Image (cartoon, rainbow, N blue to C red; front, side, top):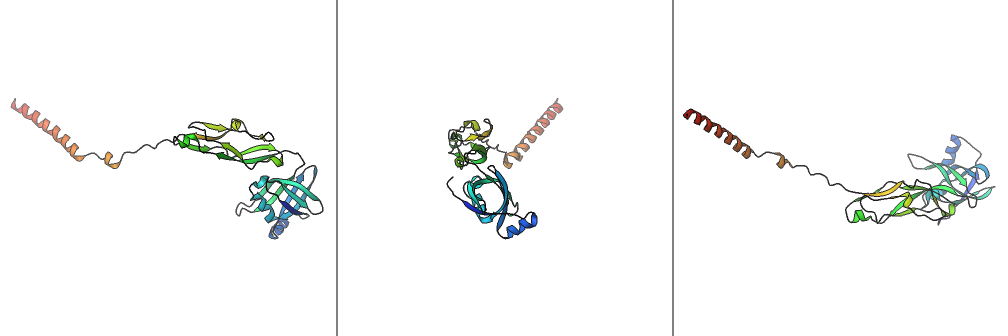
Length: 226
């Protein structure tokens, strides 16, 4: 975890919607801190500082230091958060304390590496079925992403969770047969007939009709002769 964050916080006594609105007007966020073998604490922290963590490269998986006035420092990570669906603003957060060596489950983005052979040489298309992966590890070993190399994939081939290799300290919490990405064949669109091909040639139709009528006339003439 390359980035370091230290967030100052204060204990929160007030409860309810009105109190939360007042805090947000003041540029603060109500939050709860729990875990680590200690009692839960309601706190307030600066909105900009918490939002900066969520915007960092590691986002909600960022391990940071929370310094609560009168209590002290502890290592925490986002356990849950409430985001305003309209403005995308952080509204509330649940933070989890972490004991030394404690492992947690986190969701990590999957990055596909390379251009598949089936795309490069045969015009196939790369499809990514899984974009995130749940893993179990200590906070200090949380990867920024799971890199999956797809260069060798041909058309009709795929890579699954069971094909992924990670560090020994990380345990993948997904079904081994779950598909991550595959290369599919691109079907060429069928060409529809043009308007010119659909229109019958008037001259050919007239010639056929004239030939049939002429044959009838010749037959009738022959009958009259007899």
